[in-house]
Image 1 (cartoon, chains in turn blue, purple):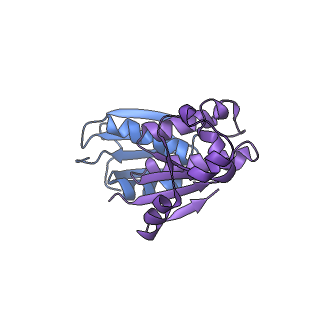
Image 2 (tube, rainbow over the protein chains, first blue to last red):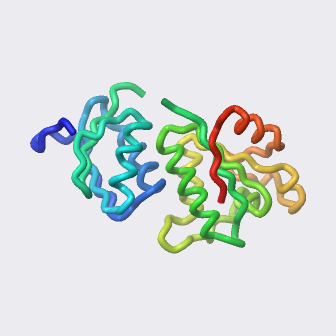
Length: 80
Length: 120
């Protein structure tokens, strides 16, 4: 958790109550469209998100810059 | 660090909850950069005939057709048990995009190589 609250966010997505596979498959596509190193703000109210999103970031190489459920700040990985 | 992941799916309209959750988890796997195979067998093979899954919409989830489409578009692979498909008299010409008919050796090779598998 290294990012400051005022860091520039390049894109945002309110996923609402979407969770599990439906959340991460869409999140994957949105991060793929972002330039490397940029910040993405996600709002995900699903109760599984606090456990899933750190795991997803570990698997995909994206950096979870901040987690304050339901808001997550993710820095896009530098390489695909 | 991509790995391989398998979802074994044996249900269709006989249990739309299991059929749907199988593809939800498959989406979670492919969405997490895992090389993901859904292996459909027994009743599950019905899902890969064009049009069959169009009216399966389990409460609390996206329609199954949408889940299957997003899975394939993200690079997911669907393997279809050959004898299960033939036994039910299904039409190979109506296979959905992304589905391939295979024999058991393909699944055995995948799992013997260390890929984990979850069943629905």
